[in-house]
Length: 294
Image 1 (cartoon, rainbow, N blue to C red):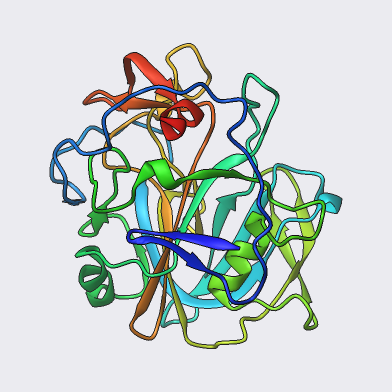
Image 2: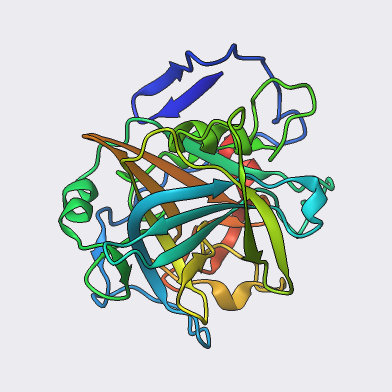
């Protein structure tokens, strides 16, 4: 498979790319690139953030302990679970959306996804300097639209959480590779609370014991993990997620192994760009599929 990076496409040596076309149903258009002000902001310095009860924009840093790809047997909203530990061995779950609960107009629930396997950005040095654990202040805040150094949104593509033909072109396998998770090895059963019930899920230990994960999103009320590790702006006013819009509050997962950083970015087909200073889509904004197809 081919991977996206800031400099272009790099070939994945683990598997053979199988060409898929996700864009055939999108309209072509012209639009400007994601670059308004540029640069990261530190938490507490400017930007417009939504107010969510018991929800605080945060960053969790920890050493990867377990990971659980989503499987159909779990019968809940698909999320990939990343479990990390701080230096005191407190565990945190970072959840990544593998699918959307709100379908696009064509019925598709695939998320738009991008992995930058060689993420080079000024944010890296700031992240390395932070202590492990949950941070609610004094960490870099992310904005997909306003910070062009973070990612090129047009390189995102619609990706299923599990491929039907075994091509490995899916979110589970993509994240597994970045985290050094090998599903051919034995798994361990661990409990996971999915927001409604506690389920036993299959977790794998990384093959590399020295994987550092930085998760960006919103704290669970229990403060033992993060959700909304995706773009948190561009939700239409008429939809059910407009109250989540804001700037410099986007989610992501950044992974460090040695001196190399990788970054995972997620957005939904039902979100729109550009956005205004409140994170709300501007007039004539384009859906993510239309914007990417431009």
